[in-house]
Image (cartoon, rainbow, N blue to C red):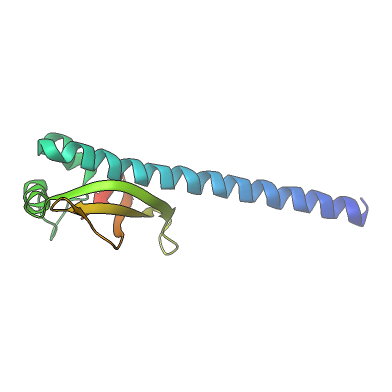
Length: 126
């Protein structure tokens, strides 16, 4: 096999590997964005049977009921997702940058949400 053929084969291999990574990264980012959107769509209901499975839970974290109460007291609403990308430090986490409104007024600075892959799917850490 000539040098040009080896180079071309290597370049194709790198391109395919990059495409696979991009595809995986894109799927993760989309999953993270979807969790944030679903959570805020369901938030007005206050139904923790729906909201609870979207939240990271565990020792030291507030319950779904506490989280819902706090978000309602602060009148926090999702305006739009600006960007979702895989956390460079953790491939099982997505950072979602979003525009949010508080008390009916859109915040100037974007808000960052962290979504983590758990054993049973992607969940929002608040």
